[in-house]
Structure formats: C-alpha cells, structure tokens
Length: 400
Image (tube, rainbow, N blue to C red; front, side, top):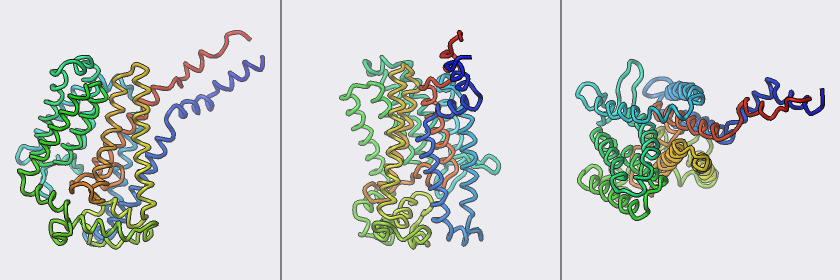
C-alpha cells in the first residue's frame, strides 16, 4: 500500500473521523458560552448565599436550582445540535402559533401563576414555565422563516414589512398584559434588527424605529409606575430610599468594586442592600467582587458571542442558507440587546427594567432558552462547514 493511501486511511480511522466531526463545531463559541455559564453559576451562588440561608435554611438553594436548569439546558442543547436547520424552518410558523396560544393561556384567570404582581408563569407540576422566554425563540424562528418566504416583498413592498410588525405588535400587547415591558422591548428591538438585516430600506426602518420608540415611551408615560421608574433613573439620588433605591445600591456596588474588586464572595451590597442581587442586578455584584477588570471581561465575552453570531450568519447568507443566516442574526441580536439593557440598567445608563443577564442571572427558563439558542447557533455553524464523513471519503483515491 502506498504512503498516500496509508495517510488517507489514517484520516478515515474512527478516532480521526470523530476528531474531525468534533472540530466541525465552533470550539471558541462553545467554550466561551460554557465559560459564561460557569461564571453565572459561581455568581448566582455568591449573590444568593445569604438570602438562601435566611429564606430556605440552605445557603446553596439557588445554586442547586440553577444547576438543575443548566443541566436541562445542556441536555436540550446536545439534542438540538443534531436537528438540521431545515426542520426549524418547517416548524417556524407552528412555533409562533404555539407561542401565541401559551401567551393567551396564562392570561386566563386561575391558569397563569402570579409572582410579584406579574402573571408570566404556567405551573407544570414541579416546573414553572415562563412563557415570555420561550416566545423569544419562537419569534426569532418565525421571523427567519418569514424573511425567507417573503424576502423580496419585505424589501420592496410596505405590506411585506408591516405584516410581521403587526404580528409582533399583537405578541407585545399580550406581553404587556402580564405585564412584561422588558420582554416586549427586547423582542421589538430584535425583530426590527432582523428586518433590517433582511433588506428593509433604511428610511422605512428608521421610521419604524421612531414609531416603536415613541410607542414604548407613550406606554411608560401613561403608566404612573413606569413613569416613576423613568424619573428615578434620571436622578436616583433624589429619592434613594424609595424609587431610586435599587439603582443607588447598584451604583454603590460599582464604586466599591474599583479596579480589581473586593474579591469573590466578599460583596457587601448583596447582604440585603441590593434587591434582586441574584437576578436582575447580578452584574452589580460581579462589578463589586471582580471590579472594573471583571466587568470589562464580561462585556468582551458577550461581544465575542454577538460577533460570532453575525459572522456565522454572514457565512450562511453567502452560502445561500438564508433561513439559517437570519436565525443566526436574530440570536446575536437578542443576546446583545438583552445583555446591553441589563448592563445598562445596572450601571444607571438605562431605566430600570426586569431583564436577566443571559446565562448569568438566576432563572431556569432564561438559562434553558439561551442554551437552546446557542446550540442552534452552533448547528448553523456546523452546517456551514464541509466536515462530514462523506466529505472526507470523497477525497480518497480509488487507485493504489
């Protein structure tokens, strides 16, 4: 047997082929996503250890629950890695219908579970499903499919652009009835970004951005509760013990963190000073314990995830895989928008909103859905790469 054939045989060995298939995934994207997930588990433990000990007599109560959610999320991610994108495209419309039905279901009195004045959960035995988190995945899938089916109409015809906006407005209305203003804002921003990536003319896009911003501002102004939160954002120190309490405590945490932080686990603000320290304001705990260096590192990690999503989407678009491309853009947009809003709220540059930091904040539904979204992104990247066993076989010569 010639040396060339021996080399090809080594390439086709089970170990080599397995290595090739594993290498077909974006290892940087996978590794940094798992890194963020691990950092989140550590921060949730650190931020919640005191409140867990007081409320549940178990300092690791929230850690165990978040770990279970992480295990479920990773298990579903492994399954999703094997699902081809053409299947997601086929079920994109049914997914939207399911999302709308679930949103309507939780608004039925006695069906939805109320927590802190909001009806956002369906109780399914021991598990509580937060519908707004699942809706994010369904809306991204629907919009990606819509842009493929009606791409030319979206770019040239006003009706093609307004139809998905109408659907999204209806979904946002259902979210506002819960109420979940933050989820509605994130979905609207993500959808507008996807439509822009789909080729909507710049003038029409800017006009609808202005309309969306005006509508959200009007909703905030018409609600005394939301208006108070906006006013406290503008000057939290005016009422630091009431409307501005959360933000002032978050800013104190940033100030204490300085350059390198007070050390992991040594936060003072998490000791019943900072409300929701393990959920909406966990970035403030990170800033206090890990300092400016830790905060910037986390921003770079999220920036890398968003950048990779857009690169993967661009490669898919150039290959003619438009559904996968728009799906990747949507994943990058929703992660970037939600992380930006959460960090902005923590730092006092945006009004206070109840949004989690993806993969970091405590919340099983959010964690599971973002694991699923990142797994879909890895699948898109995998389909962009010619790394299958058959592709390797075709390079083996038939002669000695």
